[in-house]
Length: 195
Picture 1: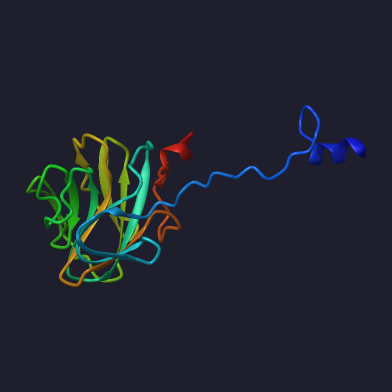
Picture 2: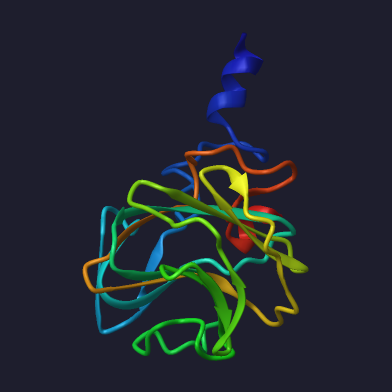
């Protein structure tokens, strides 16, 4: 019994340890208040965007297979996708320049000012848009169903990105999803949590 007690109170080399060892907490993935447009408002613990402009997530998409979601709370002009840190978050709509790839409220998937795909069905309030990204393809899902409109040729370090205008309100989910991610995909993680 004495050996067991010593295990809990003594450290190798003898003696007692005073204080405690602080645990390093892994930060939560949210919308990044240091990378957002000047007229953007981020609330709900970094998960809701409103106002006018864009915002990036606070974690790059460095893992092999990332998944995240957005719920359309209120219509207006909006976009949801990925972007680099070079993206100007005050110039809307995102997807107009080479630094962003966006599904927009008009039903287009746009990059560098080009419409890459056009959705057949409208996206309405309450719909959930999911995104998968594996460094080869970016794919979108509506209410858990694949849209089968892949985007390829993405280069560089990218982040989850979204924008709002004209009264749009979006909630972004980086964990605790509405729909089960496709096989092999998982929530966005910080680089140190991948080790």
